[in-house]
Length: 333
Image 1: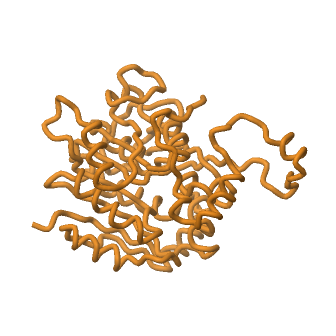
Image 2: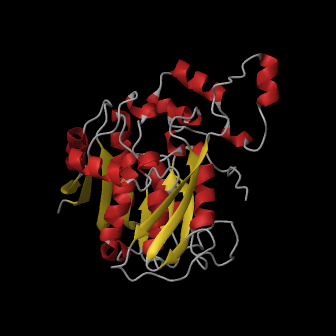
Image 3: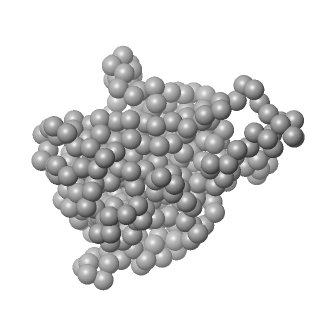
């Protein structure tokens, strides 16, 4: 199945935040994901730039199985995303963490905190399902948003990212992992008639207001979202104000924001994030804190850790991510 780039997407990648302008240009020369299916080998040989040590297949499928035996979930399933014996299986298409593509767009692979948020969502599925409208911010490949759809099939789930490269793979992953019957037309086309769909959202006050207006349903009493989720979206100070401007705009009065944050050597701390949350009118609660021993135990158990918990070189300069914290934010009233 081929999923093309949406012509309405604004062409933007998060490299513009993470790298100086000259490094963005260098990264852009390495990869153009919109040319998927075309061969660059001939061009590289003609230009004398062919790298015999480069990974000739940078793609990766991340497979997950989540035990949700304690939760009553829909038994409806698709051919690639199945629910068997109260377990959810997902296949997420992306790129290897060390691939050149990830230099341009970090959303093209999976990162450590996304897995922890998945397990938290499974353990708190009852609370998740109370949200009639659920949104994922900075979704990348869409793992958390797609799992929310599987755990809460009666809710509307909107999976968003600002990165136009990531949006291409995000649409593909939704198409192959969504429940049968979640789209009235039963095609790979995603629309707001679906119970899960993707939409580009670049953070900020003006953009989020426009997004909210466009995603509103005429039959809905409130277009705001009762549950917002995000993982591994904190890697630069410049994104924090736009993040909370967006949440303040689209979160309902009784809504919650679940944030999974992995400690890395990046120029922003969780303390700074929490301070900004207070400034924007939110209170918060730490609901999960993984310590070093937790990480070591999970590495021994395996279960896809090689895909998630490796060295996050495109964010933290080849240093492995540390503990993961999950916070729940609410309006401070």
